[in-house]
Length: 424
Image (cartoon, rainbow, N blue to C red):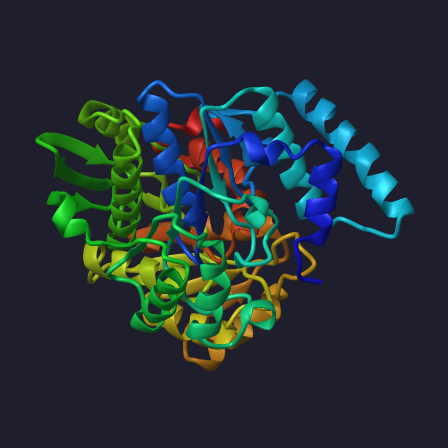
């Protein structure tokens, strides 16, 4: 049931830790994780102690609660969750039942207060208006990333309805940033909400902030404030996310937060987030991407059409059944030459055979694997006949597959993939 009553009651019992935090609040359908990661990395490079709260995780639950790029230590997680558990049980006795996400959010607030973070970059979980993170009263800046149709049963079936939910993070008088590339219907809703709340609206235009010198599947070379910078996240959609992050940085600068051009360069170049067009291997090319809705799949399509034009592409795909599967499969059939389907280990997943049949009905060759390891083995056996392998469809699939994929790739033909492979 939507509402902030449960998280409000829980945090009140914890002494309202969120009231002490200086937050940057980020909502949207796609790009939240990348934008949050960039903001946190730039702030950290500037010498600040920065909390980063995101979801879902890929390999370790503790990824969701970080400070300066380090996951919450196991002992600290034990401590804060034990406190939250006791207070949750006390609320249960009163007939108040916080959700899992609310309990995790409260634990994160408590941890960031204990660690005296200078800033906390806070990603919403679902929507915005009734998201547990929206308990914060006055962030330093609100950011709304790309909005598209997702979670329609909860957030609404139109762009306008979803934008209204996301705009719920806008607070009176607090600057809000969104992109000029945003869906015009979403911009209209965001603009109306910001006007009603006297919240200054900043429409971020990447080309006005930095110049793109060149671009590839391995990122972009940009010029920002007279610095040449390697931006490691490929794709035009990621340039939009970078624009949002840098526009938010400008807002913080106007609030007397010291953020130099050198800190921006260092933060951008060192930013990393798993399963966002992550290069697993270069030769042969293997990419892991967490795109899981029509907006994300279209962004992936645009990237591949730009950099792998006229190449034969194999895909390994698994998705949740509550997505717009008809639209997603139609887009994929226009990009991928052959598809292997798997069933992610999540009860919401679509069965691999049923998923494969959706592709076959559209004329796209597809084969269902018996399990995820079988899917990886089949894809790697087929790969010599293709120019690239793309693994996509769900962050839950990325969680299931990332370490397995790295290990099997290394055994077969590893020639130097992502520099962050050590974290597997």
